[in-house]
Length: 382
Image 1: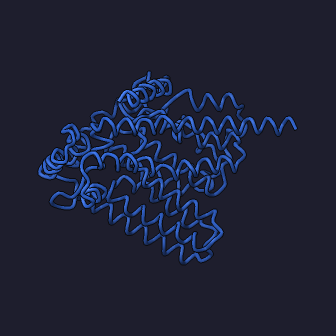
Image 2 (image 1 turned 30 degrees about the horizontal axis):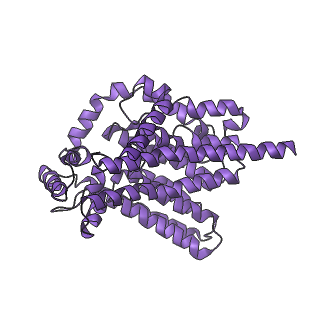
Image 3 (image 1 turned 120 degrees about the horizontal axis):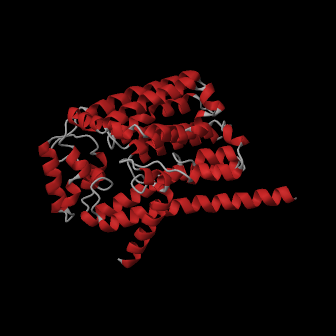
């Protein structure tokens, strides 16, 4: 009886903590929408096809077709940024509940490179990789479905979302190994031929789409045209920086500028190791080493192309976490760790988005809570 009450209390505490972690990023998106001046989190969603096809322009072109004014576009972006992460948050919580909120599942779900990352890093939530993550989750949900029609709908819908996401941001190609793994491992589709054909088709199409995006990086003219369009619909010219400004850069310039910063970012290595303890100590990784190596190969180029190392670590980790939960194989070292040590693992360190500084690592969660508290006050003040 006492054990049952203790477990019930633990479940409620973890549930409340999980909901608490969701408040900061959503508050941040609302505040971002009110200010409407973030050139990265807003600017990347405003890229469209002004005169010709350009990478990352599909969503902005959709907004263009709808003929929305500036404020309406900002609202549409904010709503989209929240909606694309809901499948992940529901999937993680559903699997936490299914596992009985055991330590190994909590470590996977709330570790510094899992859901907690979205809470501690105010620049992470709402980015375009959320589309690739949502696609992974839809295909993972298919493994739990009994109805064959819903299984096909989830795999088909997830695959289409993944392929579309490559025209919104080519970095979503990093999720291809996880997509293929989940399709091939689906227990509800008996035919190996169908699964092989589906995974092969997704692989060929996704690589083709990604290459099409990569080879159309943009130009000075496209960036200028987008900037003019942004100001025409009444938005601030500061949105012309960030992602839109990056359209002016060639891939050689991007790699060169990022490699110049590399000595600073080498300190991410211990953080990478710390954050990946739950997945790398798991039975799943040992049993699926080829898939993990494929995930490593697909995420590695991002570390050369951009300095958002925190995001790349999160993308790599969350892909593995989704696969582990989908296969119901979550056993890791935290099954033998006391609860207070588990809590320290979750809150003691954070992984900064980029521009690594010591205080951001050790006091990251505290700094984030202060930031979001200020954001909440700004929302009510406005």
